[in-house]
Length: 177
Image (tube, rainbow, N blue to C red; front, top):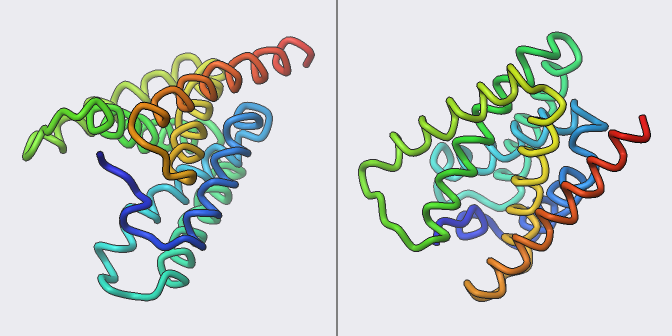
């Protein structure tokens, strides 16, 4: 199974778990957190390849820098930032789901990521509020599941449960606004 946590240590994994929990419940409300989390996730994926066999703190620092850049982008150009975040998170989510289903795309992983990215970007551009809810709960649930290291069956159940709870919480918060 594709797991960011296989590339990072426990300290960074804990930060990912906390970011995931925040996205799960507050992704729509705090859209800049949604975009910052996309940058953070991108940093977690990119840093180990850019800096192989480096300490965990360096991977975390790169992820935090990417996250801060995402948050800054979100404040300055909201719609573009959310569309870019939708692309990043859509790509990450579709690749993660394919790997979780134990499918092995091999060299096609980039095409799967591109398809997920395009879908996430389109969702974000055309259905802004719903996209924030859908993508933030999806990726938030993924980050939480990756942070607790369960078996495949338990991970799938936890993922689905968190996804439902996150959507319900965020939709209720949206209706109250």
